[in-house]
Image (cartoon, rainbow, N blue to C red):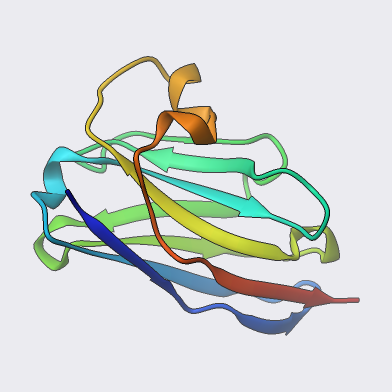
Length: 127
């Protein structure tokens, strides 16, 4: 199995940027597809995006497309979520998740398709 730890969250104002990290250990990092999800208070966990094993392909939810970028550095066992032009509606706890895959893109937009999860990091965007 793989263990995941998110970091980098914080309180920022609308329009600013923030970069989250997802550090992995305990597994072969390059064998996992890594997804990002977020959960706002009172809402279900929602898909943000995912990145494939090599980092050559990413897929994003429409709500973040063009603003968020996922990248990975397999040598460092880390996946990043660069968030730009943040909006108050981006406020949530952000989680990274891992799955051995590969399956279809639609498969990885659902939280229940991932077996391994980090503890989450809070992102708050003020207006």
